[in-house]
Image 1 (spheres, rainbow, N blue to C red):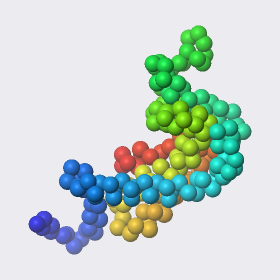
Image 2 (image 1 turned 60 degrees about the horizontal axis):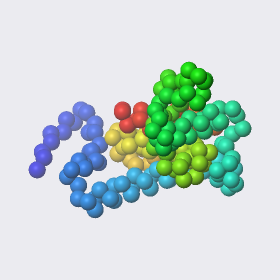
Image 3 (image 1 turned 180 degrees about the horizontal axis):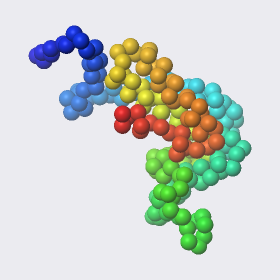
Image 4 (image 1 turned 90 degrees about the vertical axis):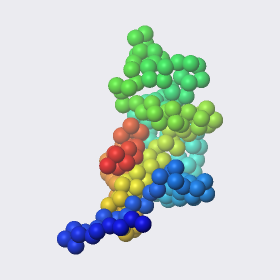
Length: 193
């Protein structure tokens, strides 16, 4: 048994709610994964409402906004899927700025998102893939913040409110409304915290 000595002068930190994956039974692992997926869906529901004009119509041919940056982001999502199919470098392309090409790692691209979304891009096209990524961006950002908040607060509702405030902050919303996935997916900063 773990015995801890409480110092009355300092508030106790919330107990850690995560156990090592190595110590969890397969059923516990599955329940934990389903729980986190449920939170991602819950956090993404407001985003579906924000982009309802896309999801209620033609998701494979309607961009989230009529701005020029959406077209660029669609290409940034499509290129890694195309590169994987043809054995090309997903981080460099001569298809733009020909003949020299461009390094996508020094651009506002999001090659990791494009690589993760590649199966969806192959199945439904780059517009649908970009729309899905933009719709999930606030929900994933909120989920990452929820995990971080749960380490600092014991009240689940406080963590939920903090997560929604982070995931649907003006910075995230303005980024995804302009089609900037690289700025709108902020799942890693809270997880790093």
